[in-house]
Length: 350
Image (cartoon, rainbow, N blue to C red; front, side, top):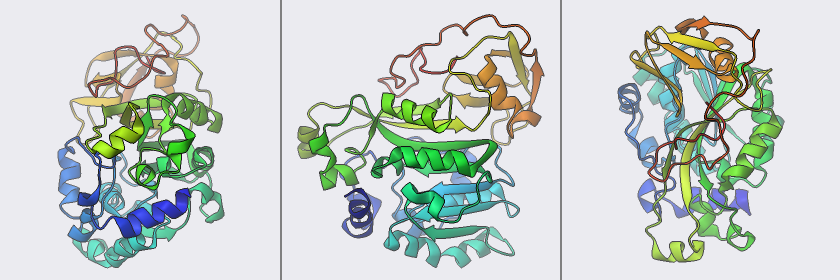
């Protein structure tokens, strides 16, 4: 039911984002200036059919090769195409013909708008549950993004498994999606409206962490989260009190990440050299690293900075020669704050 319902809901039921019944497939936070500038260069027809729930524009992606899972009408792909520049590339994968038609019809318009000699964007029709059947290169992509789409597929583990194989070492899956505070009952998962509104297919956050780690992403990092408002009375009644959150995670493909945040007495100093993030670099919701200051971090965070595209932007202090135990304040509570902020007790990071 999942693929067929998604194709029907986003290809035929919804004409524009104004037709949504909840705010699950909406982005609430204000984009940073660079993303706002890029959004102004996206065709209005593409923007009108946007159904994302977060901002999937990670830092320092100039020249990167990006894969967009569930690219829809192409808004995120065309924003990222400007951020990676003409030397980078964006490949969008989507299974809804109507959405792909909108994205593809404006490729030449965007190429001219960006001032590129040739387009750095392409769109592929395909099911993201079957990514490895699409002849995409493995160990190739610097970043994989997805915006409120993984909840729509039945075999979410297959998506995480394929993403891990398609990423290069040091690459990351940076994505926004909808999560539930408890497992959604089976009888609700077949409801076409609840599914199309990104609710009944939402993963319980604990199951998500388990699936991500099984795929090889040892230490998922929560970047932002917000509680969702269910203003439609009929939908709220069906859900019977289940709470949902929109959240953005980053998952790094890095060998040697540990299951907990271990303390080796390490620290970093941010150089302030990432464009648009000159004052503070945010690795995740618990790591707001101010430029010029020594910032203590755990071994996993060290690798996420030292063994990725971020290395040139930091100075590194210490090594892995002495272990001081688990990093203070690591915990296993629900990661999402009730007010939309990351809670004081994190789920998987120091």
